[in-house]
Image (cartoon, rainbow, N blue to C red; front, side, top):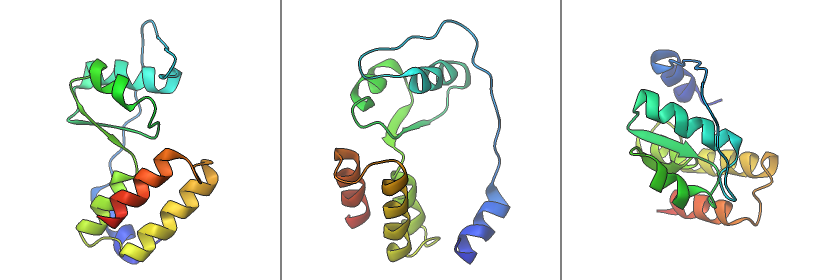
Length: 117
């Protein structure tokens, strides 16, 4: 982990764990994980909702008032803020792509475009 990123996460990291109650739904593009995030969004009303499912993105956008973005945008934001060097962000994307089976997938191509912008 980059020294700057460690410092940033020590200074600003705050996580909460939430239980989602109520009936869950699923569709042809939204799985149980995204569905629970949508239910939680209704309760917490966050400004943003991140997903790693490019296929589900359009449907999620219709079901939530939050701005929905692909999770790799976090890497782009860290580069823009000077927390990560562009090369480090690319390396991290490659690691994520390998572990998430994204190589060659549309989300991988979109994530590469985000980092190239």
